[in-house]
Image (cartoon, rainbow, N blue to C red; front, side):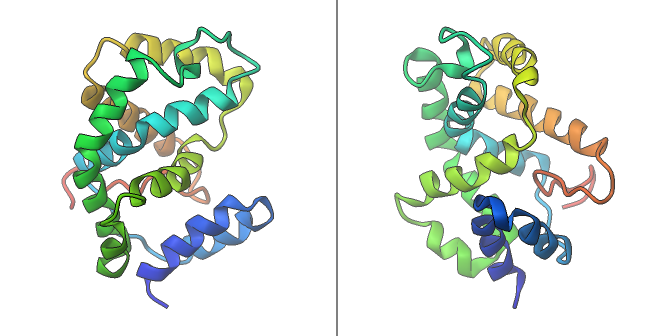
Length: 182
């Protein structure tokens, strides 16, 4: 079985709580192609509205309803939705790079981005605890004045920083190439 089929299967398996450790084992045995930081930024920008909603759900008991990450409508999230539409072609290319052309061809329809967003956002938010929510809200509040594309780049940089501090046994949230490689 090639990586083109293993990654999507692993992503689907990761949605089931009882299959999460099995999916990590499958992914751990395969060397994934990496994406550049700009490609990762496009992918995050393409799913950032769903990412915000997911974080808002995780933080619902820790933050007031007025918190930015708990907003599901309005000007704040609408800016990210507009950028998500713009970033999707580049984000789709990043996914194609990771999964290969067979899976990439399935991403050429209107349902692909929401489906992908629902698969990717739990990977990006895994490990967030209620105690993390005030710090996340502060980061989002500080990033709010930035253009959404810059905010996506900031979030990718944070993900890279956190992943760099993880043990070798833990897989990164996004397979981002080291600087200077493609």
